[in-house]
Amino acid sequence: MKNLSIIALLILTACSSSEKDKIEADRALIIATELEFARMAEEVGVAAAFYEFAADSAVINRGGKLIKGKEAIREYYQSAIRPGTRLIWAPDFTDVSGDLGYTYGKYTHLVPDSIGIITEHHGIFHTVWRREKDGRWRFVWD
Image 1 (tube, rainbow, N blue to C red):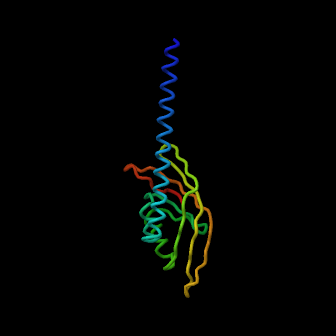
Image 2: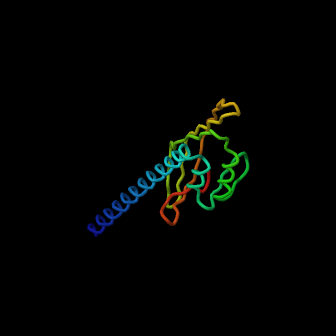
Image 3: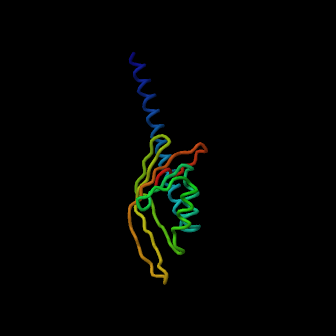
């Protein structure tokens, strides 16, 4: 009986350690995805980045209005973003459970006016990520 208890403890420890490793790997992948998302927004543009990293069913909340779906999100950013606008962010925290994860952190939104004077807006973002069937993490809420 004592041997069975030891074996059970070893199996539980191995599973627990394996699960912790998977969670840490998923956290690292979500952080890498978030950073790539931010990099693309800087290099290619906000509309293209939000389109690329959105799940088909993604929803964003902007100005108290819900914009639903990947195509609607791209259209929103194409019409709402002034040329020269920059959006910079990085996650401060991430967590994951199964196929859902979330990040939050600080962002800076730099908006030029018609004569080029830039106004800075700072805030906190929160993104919910879902692992898609292809294994990639895409945001479902921002």
